[in-house]
Image 1 (cartoon, rainbow, N blue to C red):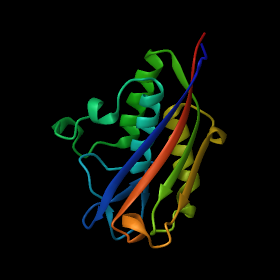
Image 2: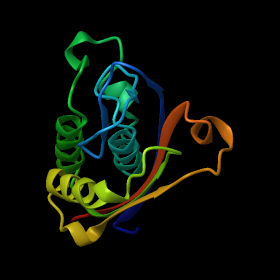
Image 3: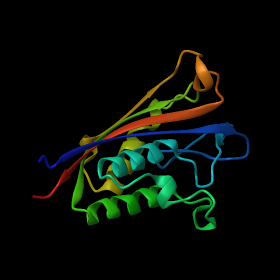
Amino acid sequence: MSNLRIGHGYDVHRLVRGRALILGGASIPFELGLDGHSDADVLLHAIMDAMLGAASMGDIGVLFPDNDPEYEGASSLELTRRVCALVGEKGFTVVNVDSTILAQRPKLSPYRAVMRDNIAGVLNIDPSCVSVKATTEEGLGFTGKGAGIAAHAVVLLEKAK
């Protein structure tokens, strides 16, 4: 049996006025933010779901339900730290993360290094093991029309022998 496990995560939130835009734990200046119970960081939510999926531990909706007041406005960096600890208790460590943010606006390239460093820090891995990519959808779909932002993530876990 292999000691490597791959997980995929996906998340999406609508853009609204009156909320901060937080992606990968970075505050990004923009007139809109993501709507959600926590800070609505779609990138970290996708990464957490990928980690939990690889470890066969469910998803973030099970661990951090959106009807629990404890998680209202919660930092997704802190939630990711908790997921990393839970996955670690099962004997897994994160090997690498590959992620893609789908957003028509704002341009995210100036913030990718900060997001990568935030993610690596909370997962206790080298930043060279984290990839954060961003793409537009050429005006197509809800992300292309600027109604929301989505993220995909793939995580490789390794279980100690």
